[in-house]
Length: 148
Image (cartoon, rainbow, N blue to C red):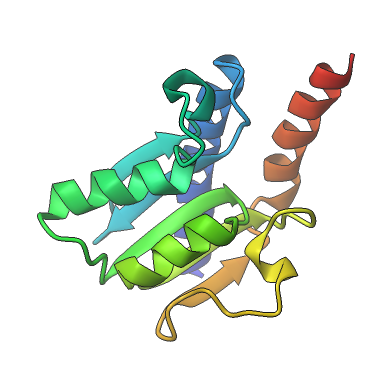
């Protein structure tokens, strides 16, 4: 039960990052990486600001966490991300060998689960649906505003 509370707490932190992206007119996806109960990386989409299609929240978080830890592997770390990672970010998570990925809402259009390929490392544990409504809601609000 403590793990569930922790997962919700850290997903709320990822949602804060998604709100930062929303406020910057970026697709509102947020991510945090946690090691030993401590946030070691916070990130949100920066594709527009950096003019870089690879500047997804997860990619930014992986880079920051690796720098913090002094190595490319994120063993004993958990990625909390508001929306299911795309193929690129899932592939990157494979190479980090991250221990866990906790996902807020699925992405039925561009999420990696839409492929018939397992892109996470075999040892990576996945959990989905943490604060799913809140995570989906900020995306819906963003795209609703874009359409009007």
